[in-house]
Amino acid sequence: MKTSDVAINAVRAGGLRALEYFEQRDSLIIDLKGPQDYVTQADRNVERLIIELLSAEFPEDGFLGEESEQIPGGRQWVIDPIDGTSNFLRGMPYFCTTLALVENEQVLGGWIYDPTRDAMYSAEKGQGAFCNGSALRPTWRASFATALVGICHSSKLTAQELANRITGALERGAILRQPGAAALMLCDLASGRLDALFDLHLKPWDSIAGLLIASEAGAKVSHYLADPNWRISPQPTLACAPKIYDELCGLWPEATAVKLL
Image (cartoon, rainbow, N blue to C red):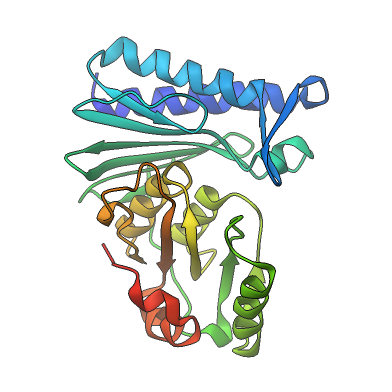
């Protein structure tokens, strides 16, 4: 079986398991890792299932999961069992399961499954981006004045910094969205439903699968793996319509220092 087929089967199985937990979420035990940073046995069990499925096919591979210890390997799978846990726990159907494959510090593939809509987003380096097997061909806006802009809110962003970023976009005429699952927002951008997204401090399991999908769909995206400490230190996540990039950097100057893929 091809690596991509194994990956799709694993992330789909994980997402469907997450959906089962979503439907019985009131019975879940919830722990708090930090401010507004929740984890449940659903997160842990979904991640364990994905690791088991991948390990059965690729026993030499390593793993970097949000909820488990890092396992090194020549190839390494990066997993977020439930991106959008806060939404998940509050009954909001905007969450996903993400998986990326890294080898020689390059992202070779990214797979994101939205179980509430049965939407499988996928990309392999140099092969294009797809949703349920159909190629993504987004049509983006050319300026903030007509754009729909995704806002992420990492815990390292102060309230004033977030307010300044929001105010600047609104003053340019943008409409904002903050749905609460960065990986799925990157899929929305790759599909043409968003025109820009930027955050300085997202973690790898939130970002790298979606960044590859957005890049393969034609977006301008940040090079998350440019920093050798990307596994342990949150990195910038930037994705936008190519024609909006210059305006984005003028509006949010910190974006100019972000290395692009």
